[in-house]
Length: 445
Ligand SMILES: Cc1ncc(COP(=O)(O)O)c(C=O)c1O
Image (tube, rainbow, N blue to C red; front, side, top):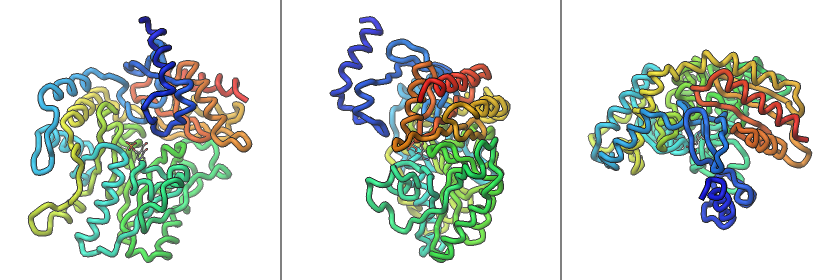
């Protein structure tokens, strides 16, 4: 069967497929599927053989580009050597080696790494560590968790509860008790078309003081925010905002958690987002780029003092938490191959040398039809479109489809098109992404 016929057969069969797709309009998709069949470097190939430039690093995760030889070889070797080994009361060398390698590139003072399997699990793990840390130090009354409107911390109950995207919450009940949210920082009235960090809005961090006054700060365990909010459409923190949040947390003994599931591993031009932004949290979460998206994995990085607080009690299990697949051998192998690739090719800082070209290309879309904002930081960017009356998201979805038909994959989220190419992207490919978007915007109503 030739490729075209194969894809016709697959597409004909999809309407009845058993696959309940995540975060997808299943009925709509299965009627007109978009199937990716192969990937290499900066490109995907569709099931019918079309080449597609990857403008979103898979799903914010394939930072070194697709099917990189060192990562592929490491996973293949590990799969043949030892498929699985438990990390409860047992260990295997790759888990220790990978944790130590990660700690070596982490900001100073973050020498402890707890493995998970996803960003969602990292968020929930970080929240639980924060609660247990306070309890271990005799501050068990700190039981509240603070998130931020428009925040995204995955889909598990903790992350959903501190998250602030309404659609992700409304069908699922009240969530975890004791959660509150500070205001988001998105302000098109003052900050539209900002290049890099917006000028206005540092004072929005003071909203945390409002919640401290309301709840009594001694009841608050942690505040969790993304350094740059990704899923809500690339919301860059205003200048001074994160430092102010840091200061308020320090003043009240509240832990600050950065959710770096997107911003870690070079996306902002430094290994970790906190380094680029110059603000240090107490805990931070990662996933995605940690294994270049090859095998699911996440991690929570903890400050030494947090780990040490757990090591003071009687001998025994210090933290009753973990996943069957924490430190899975295949994920560790993929992670080690990923770090080798990042380090050999300088990818953890390469975004810095591309940022200006990326910013200029993106901001050249200012003035195109429907565009009401353009924003960027590192190799993260977004174009926000005027929503169609009564149909939020529809215009940007159509633009996303047009861009895909023209051979470029970008991320559609609400009224926003978001961009986060692999960090191996070349300047001409950056130009092609934004030229394709320009063409699509001209073609839609
Ligand atoms: C900041 C942030 N946290 C958590 C998650 C959830 O990660 P996962 O889908 O791997 O559970 C995401 C996913 O996009 C994210 O962007």
